Figure 1 (cartoon, rainbow, N blue to C red):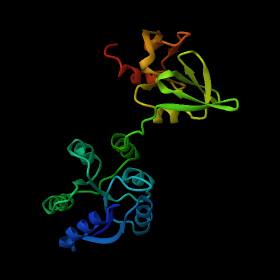
Figure 2 (cartoon, rainbow, N blue to C red):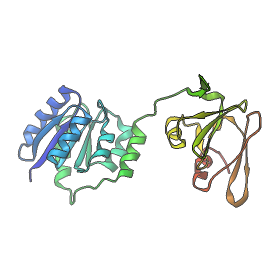
Figure 3 (cartoon, rainbow, N blue to C red):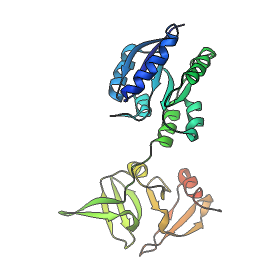
Figure 4 (cartoon, one colour):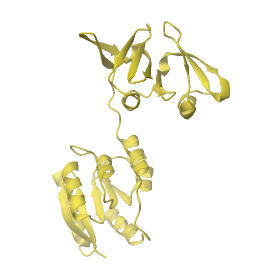
Length: 252
C-alpha cells in the first residue's frame, strides 16, 4: 500500500531532510504536498486528504495541535518534534508515532514498521487533542489585568486580586481591599489565562489560592473558602469544581 503523505514543518532544512529520508520508501510514502505554516497545512490536508501527515508542533499562525483541531479530515499523525523524552508517553498515546529532531534514518525505519503492523487506522478525539494542547503549549504568563473605571483604565496586579465572580452578564474582579471592578473577560477565559494559583471553585467563582485564609467543611460535602481580603469573603464551592480545590490541599 502507498500512503499519500504531507510534510508539515516551518524549517526548510527539516523538510528537506525528511523528504530525503522518505525517498528510500518511495513505494510506501507518496509525498503529495509540503507546508511551512499551519494555515498552508490546513488547506493542503483538506484538499488532498492524505493518509499520513508528518507534523511539526511549533509553527507560525497555529501550532500542530491547533491545526489538528481544525481538520475535518483526520489523517494518521506522526509528530516530528524537538520536545524531549518527558513528552514521549503523550505522543505515543495520541499519534501513530513521534520522531525527535533531528530525525535519524534508523528511527524512521521503526516508524515504517509500526505503520505496517497497524491493524486499523488510529482514531483521534477532540478531547485527546485538547489534552495534548494543554500539556505542551504553555500559558503565556500574565502579572496584571487592565479594567475600565469610568474614563480611566486601572492596572490591577494579580497579587492584589482576591477573587473573580460572575453575576448575570458581568464578571467582577474583587481586590484584597474589597474594591471591585468589572472585567470584559468571561469566567472561562479567565480560567484559561490566569496562572495556576487561580482556581475555579464554582460555575461563577475563581479564587486566588495564595489569598485563602481558611477552608471549612460545608453541607453535602461542599467546602467554604474564607479569603484574606478586607471583608473576609466567604465563597462556597460548586459540586462540579470541588476537585479543583481538593487537588490544591494536602489533606481534606
